[in-house]
Image 1 (tube, rainbow, N blue to C red):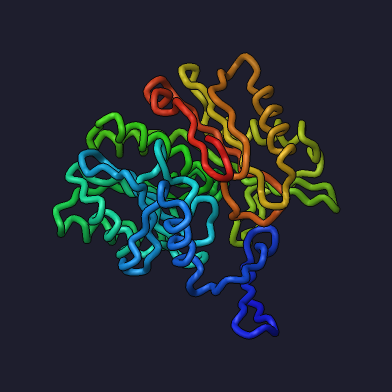
Image 2 (cartoon, rainbow, N blue to C red):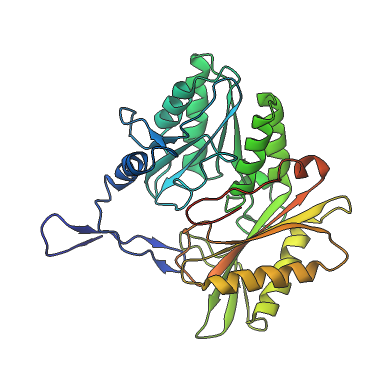
Length: 341
């Protein structure tokens, strides 16, 4: 954390995979709460806040409906655009942020569900990290005391975050959470029960995989599996430092993990990291699609900026293998300030 010579101005730099995030001039102790208040103030047609909640870090859609299952997503603060971009018609009904790089509060999740007041229940979505899991689990316990049904689903799409052969539950989550939100939301809006929405979300989670690809331009190396908290890469490759090389390496790695069935289509998402040119993400997405060839049918391909977790040069590449049941919940597009999906 850096303190400027100007009184009461805080410039907060936080380290993550690939280096440091851009500095903040706002107060790190209050900025995530202030962001919620600011969004509700300047975009009241899109966001509602609960300023009297435990931490004041809750965003709700203005038109949440208590007559159906609601989808509540939570994550650490500062994870943009997840903090607000994944919320809206066709996506999550509520979003809960923690403090910067801290897990969301169980009490904020609990209060968001209480405010929605759905008798049909709530699906709690999060990335599979210990703090996120524990606080969502605690929120579900608190809600059970209020006789409000809840189900949990943690994204476990980070394919190199656990050793080969390890149970999927040991993996962390990455950008695949976006697919879970979209699928679960579409299922909930179709009037499905909480049990059905939860089943569909878990099914999608089992059929998606994300690969972190970071690049060392100075030494012309491609790293796979580097963590956003500074974990070293799982493997380094010196012979594929090109768009074509990264496309082939990524496609082979993800297909080896998922083993797409003939009845499935591959949905692809390429998220550029913060130091990566937008055009590189689109070109890479096109090259990966070409790798599929005639053997693997491709559904929709998306490319853009879906998370700021990595302040690095590289990409997060997600595959979802969808059968007809999952495909019905992947229709339509969602538009936010920073991406379409």
